[in-house]
View 1 (cartoon, rainbow, N blue to C red):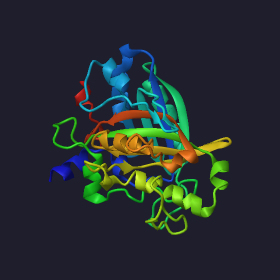
View 2 (cartoon, helix red, strand yellow; view 1 turned 90 degrees about the horizontal axis):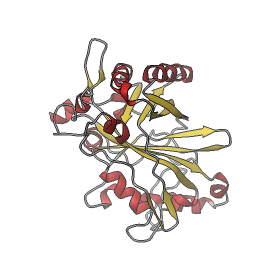
View 3 (cartoon, one colour; view 1 turned 135 degrees about the horizontal axis):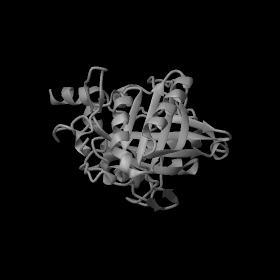
View 4 (cartoon, rainbow, N blue to C red; view 1 turned 60 degrees about the horizontal axis):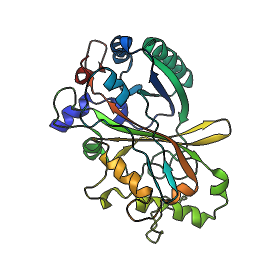
Length: 308
């Protein structure tokens, strides 16, 4: 029963399938004296379904508030893998089917959040293809999100429970921009590509004899102690000659993501995830996604935890 109630108060876009079009907005703090009023405008505009919002440490700290479990993205490195930390005050994930509407929503948000917050970066994203299990594909052609928990397991992995009003139904999200090296990927044989991922691209079949560096083996969620389940909602992105994956993982805390990322970087056993041969992260940030409260217009962000 608690899971059902928490699901109702979650931002609906977290649990919904990835939309055909997406846009990621990254805001920095500009004038903190207007922050409270601007966030109240955000609460009305971010419905949680078409606009998913996440608050960073800098924003919460500027209000003198505290969100249990919220922390900055750690710098993770070693064994040839470098995972940068690029903290950001506010993140918005715009979801929809019409790119033009996302552009107009971006303008509305930028206007409502000024002068407290400045829009620093906009990243265009999209759903690509359809894999054997119905998920979208990464630009390398491999299905993304195969191991996502489903239904009640997804809610348990992605949402905060039993922490009281203002926290229940919220979520913690890790956001990274990965840039693909398509030349390096195309220089690999089909077998090498499949071994790097740990699945056959043509049918998504998991390779039991894949090397220990295969991504699937590095991140097998049930192989951690405790188990490290996250709910992935990643989307491909492209800008000019560059493209890759916006990795987005929701969790009841950041612990599962950090455990997976540290193993990918080889901090457990010195074995680096083979994905680092064909892609690299250029950003990384943590955010807290507040729950929503029903109102006359359908719903708005519940900002009680930060005093609003």
